Length: 101
Ligand SMILES: C[C@H](O)[C@H](O)[C@H]1CNC2=NC(N)=NC(=O)C2=N1
Figure 1: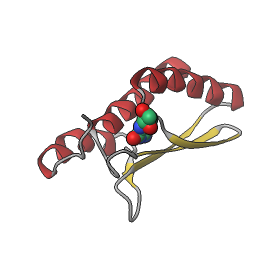
Figure 2: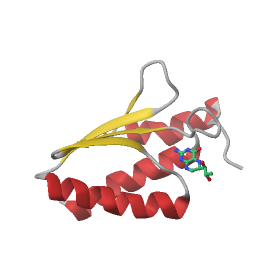
Figure 3: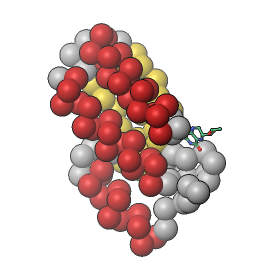
C-alpha cells in the first residue's frame, strides 16, 4: 500500500533529489523539476522512456512539454502527497538523462 512519506523518511529520500535540481512545489506536497533537452525529439524520446517506467510502476507524472523543455511535477494522488513512488520515479527520470543525452 502506497503511504505518505513520514517526517523521518522524507529527508533521506528527498535530499538527494533536492541536490539534483528537484524542488518542493509551493503550497503542495509535491516535487518539481524542469528538464531542458537539445531539441524536441530528445525531449520526447526521454518522455517516452519515462512513460514506459511510469506504466510499469503504475505511477505517472504530471508534466508539460513545450519544444525542448519538460516541466515535471510528481506527487501521489491516491495519498494526496509525496510517497516513495515519487522519489523512485524522480530518480529514474534523472538516470534516464544520461541515456537521452
Ligand atoms: C488506478 C491507478 O492504479 C491509480 O490511479 C494510479 C495510477 N497512477 C498514479 N500516479 C500518481 N502520480 N499517483 C497516483 O496515485 C497514481 N495512481
